[in-house]
Image (cartoon, rainbow over all chains, first blue to last red; front, top):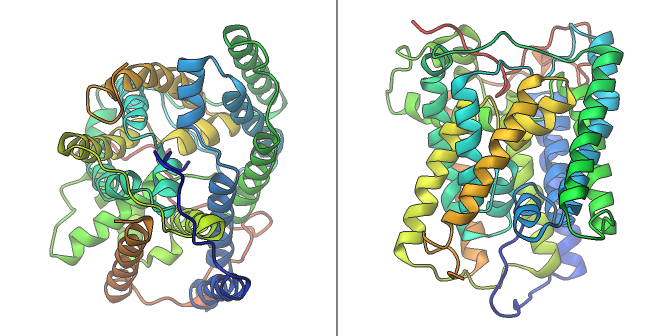
Length: 376
Length: 58
């Protein structure tokens, strides 16, 4: 997830005493959240930290593997993603079938705006080399592009949610899901089919996953299942980011009653409630913290930030806004729609994957023109 | 500028967000919070998620 440096990165790896102190402080923070906001909030924050630790620790993500599949025909990262989703599906679909009241999946309708949003999201995530989770992890690890994109991602997410009902009214199908044993069989067959296609298109040896990919897939899958069991809903990212901006808008006297989405009773109540009671806010904060912890543990934060032309920073800001807005239209990012959607049987997750992958192909070709990488 | 500066700015932003949230939100009450684990709690899932369909347009 971290930005490649042009020169060997100077390291300022912390000593054992500093590491022990920081670990104690992080554990204390989780306990403090559990004591003030309730045990579920503390547990969800801990799971979010785990996501951040895993993604940054194993240098695993979603954008990079798609880029390598498109540019280098290296299918290994994509295969690891499919493996993780398959493991989660094996647990999530039976759990949802047996506990439909207590647990819910990431189920959303397929529609015109949903498909368009996923395509645009796929392009924008390649521009900043960070998807939903990737932008949070990159920002947490000290990557300036991720840190600049993040607030604009949040603003875009708020605005996309503000207009979501209008976009959805342009044309949507009823929510379609793959449930129970047959749903699991179809989901696993679909994942296997994409894996087979990736291997066919991929270069020789793509099936050999590095050990860190195996570890990342397994750890992320366990954490995602734990998230579903503890929170009652699958892992998601973008709702929380939009909520942060909604709270700021209200704090400065803004009125959200003009938005069908933000004025809906459940969302209006969440705007009034503490962020420490919102599931996606807690996992988002944990993701940032976990990534920061790994980056600091590994090498400190001494490496310099890369120099980019002004037009590249403008591109990062615009891409951040677009990422946030389009992910709301698409009913989620790579996590909420692709990872959690497919793993909990939502048909929109499969459509999201196809549209976002096509968008990624476009986004990769936009980067040189925007000054974010050298032209070849 | 190093990554340290980026992380410090990000940390300040997060602290600012949490301070704003604390000042503006309904006070927390851990005694009315849901049980730690949703599965087996007997409570309906109610958290917000990015995949949740929106209400109809006005």
